[in-house]
Length: 290
Image 1 (tube, rainbow, N blue to C red):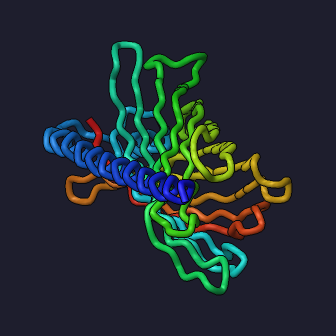
Image 2 (image 1 turned 135 degrees about the vertical axis):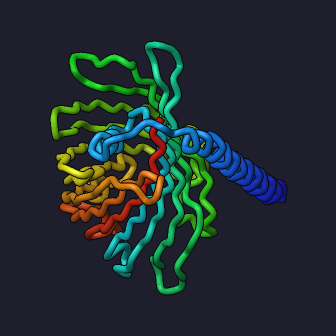
């Protein structure tokens, strides 16, 4: 009886913590909006579409932006259904001093998850919110732009059956390095997460995102940025997701608003048992240059 009461209280505590995190995220988005609106109103400097395109391809540039990335994953799960994920990924650079910048990159997933069994329905809700923060020197290191910082994941998932994320709290490092040479922008973002608290099986998850873009006139570009992942807690047949693919995009203006629009497609050369076969990605990114 005592164990049952403890589990109920523990569950209520977890729900309260999740609600607080969600409120913090909403407040953060409102603060970002308050920061961005004056910047947009005071903008006077002219910006080349190609220069802005290059900045959007740099994960740690000094460009404030709010991307909305819609991902459709086909042939997902044992029922081979479609999964949809909308990622809201504000990028907020801050100047710490004359030598260092800090770039905050929260990632807010809204998920539509397909059923995995005959008795399940489609599940909609908030996934686990993540945060990447990069400390980046303003000067290049041997011609490389670099950033290093913390990577956090919070158990904010709203699903009733655990399909929208684990209930673990996780932390790890994130590192990015890139070069910008003429028409080209290329580099890689590496991260890892370990769980340190939670009732679900441990999180031990690595990701590698190589990226390369070729920029053309009038803000057009070709790009490839597959995310290769490894779940080290899974058995050997279900550890790796290895996609290949790419797409194209363009930076342009809608009235006075700078926008980056792109479309990409990826095929998984290898994926876990319940992973998708291929993915279609659309992104609309609102840019707020200084």
